[in-house]
Amino acid sequence: MLAATHTVYVYDRRGRGQSPDVGKPYSFQYELDDLAAMVALAGPGTALLGHSFGGGLVLAYTIREGFTGRIILYEPINSILRQLSGGHYAHLQALVDQGQLDEATAFGMEKVVGLPAAQVAQARQSRGWFQSVERVTAFAREVAGLDALAPSEAETDAIRVRAFVLLGTSTALVPIRVATAGVAARVRGLTLYPIINQGHFAHFENPEQLRQLVVRCLTEA
Image 1 (cartoon, rainbow, N blue to C red):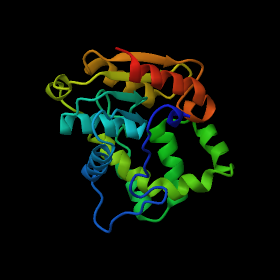
Image 2: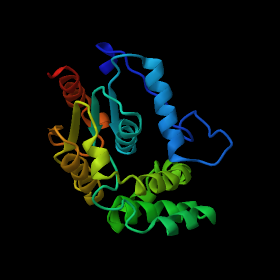
Image 3: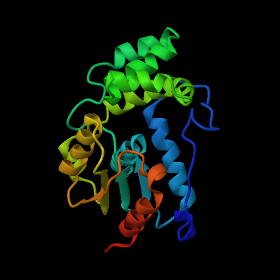
Image 4: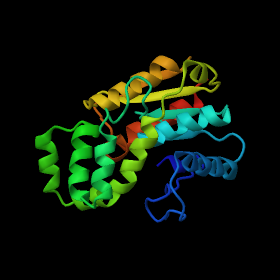
């Protein structure tokens, strides 16, 4: 929908979609290198839109590269105010290493994402559960990267971008709200917009409202 009025670049992050890993140990810095390659491809005037992990990625990239374009962060995950995993990463990774991927998925959803146990049990019966299990190896390493994403005040004070943060009014998960609050508290001069009656998945559930907000962020003085 956004591509009707703007040139949009969307890419599979490494280890997801059709993009395989490159045969060397994973590093969060490689994610930033990949984003840097996309920005170079897109050229001057590029703006960055990041959702969830992608929002944390855009924040980290902006700090590392001194990016000066516009950034739009939709519920960006980070550990500015509180470590994302809450100390549960080691056990999550141990379950993955032991091949207990189903158990790792349930553990991650409850202890890291913050879903109630009853909701996790219900998700286990859904047709989409196997996709979550397939992604849990990538999820675990992303948690490790986000656990370390706790920039200093000096680093966030040095950000020189027109920044926007989007937060769903129906988003109830505490880790997401805390992470978003961390960015709102630390990045100077940002603008916070609510996504009315939506949570973490407005791009599926109300894409038109999200499109309008993104366009507003791209064009607002």
